[in-house]
Image (cartoon, rainbow, N blue to C red; front, side):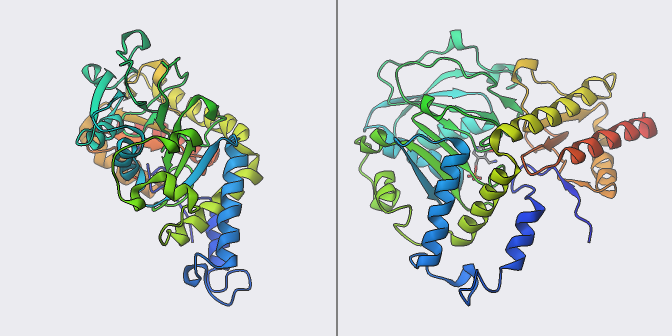
Length: 361
Ligand code: PMP
């Protein structure tokens, strides 16, 4: 069996050690006599697993005590639809800083419920840069400010988060959580779908300042209520147990590898290697994102002749490099360099790119 280097944007590559462990204990979860897929989420074995995952997440991300951690299903998009229900009163405004596709999605999900305003957008420049802080128009009465820490499709990342106003900041960290140390105390809510940097699809993590859980919000069903979900330990109903288990294995793996400080170093080296290869190709490959906004996690790039795109993808696959086809919004290629992608994978990609250029130049 050979596993390729997988540059998929999400669901994305998982640590081989995690997959191996999941396989090893699939039939009998740690002496339970049943698979983790088959046991009650309210039984002692699963409760221990859930508590361990929360403790590991808190330790990995240095989550302060005044923040609750929730594990939900429905993905990051469902979170985006629930943010206004939970954190803005009827008729209240919220500000959205839009730096790419996922910022637009967050805005669209909120718009039916509240007065969702575009406080800033870099759409005019094709989302190749971040909206200049001096041009943000924040509303003093806004319930919160929303931004996307890393735009997975456009490859644009807030490398230095600017100062915000007084409203709590809600940040979508789906594609960059745990990629480097983060000061959670700057945010009201940090949320992330797990399927990029944290584990499998099907489970989403929210880190919520506890006082915000007391916001009035909109009338909503209890199942959509984050305060109720926090009180119930994210078990108001049956949670995605398998996904929670895999997420827990990934958190342990990240801890054992040295934690987020170690991943920050690895991720910086991986991104630098790939951008240098693109920039050093004499225009054969190009990435169009402003230098200050280049994502460390998702690197969209174009081959100089789009007719070569399918050839690149096919030959890369032959060379054991998969998941490189760009998103349909942008075309071209995209390499996602999440924590579980080893540095040797980026080296293999860069070697392949140089060799491809020689053969097709
Ligand atoms: N936000 C970002 C930054 C994303 O990359 C994605 C998924 N690619 C989403 C939100 C939507 O996540 P989901 O598919 O889990 O709803």
